[in-house]
Image: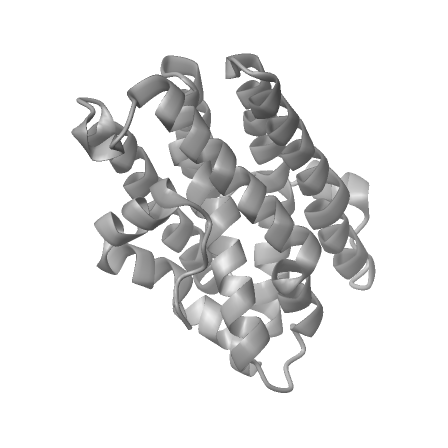
Length: 227
């Protein structure tokens, strides 16, 4: 499968990450989702931690509203918060309810070290930087899951993780990815100018994306290690 078209910045950042991007989107956890070999215990542990992650991630996207300078930026950031809380988090709630885990228990679950490191890195990028820094740190999660969903939607066979795959392969989530990609491009063009790579800050925001990509791979590994 070719890389999905989520905008110019995503394509450049994805290429700059090289093997780190591959280690994320083709992590053994992801491949186990595809072929159904991922242990249920690993998936359940991931789901609980990912619910906690999504709460912090939604807060980071709410910070993007504060950092926005245009109505379009604010609109996309607000819509992404809604998608995280109303779409992704509810998938976790439904799945965990089948395991006897209530939403209240999910919300109060202590964060794993991998979760803590990732979410606080993203928040620090937004607090210490501008919208470019924040979006670069947020993008690997939103757009990486979109890429993973598309590929697994094409390649997955009979797997117990079909609902998870369908969520990220579906039109609703893919539209979120396209809108986020367009917002990233517009935000960088507004603040860095074009071409992006000519801007003095380009390498810094690229490193934000690269570090978040590594932290994403670490999050998958957390699911495997602590199952």
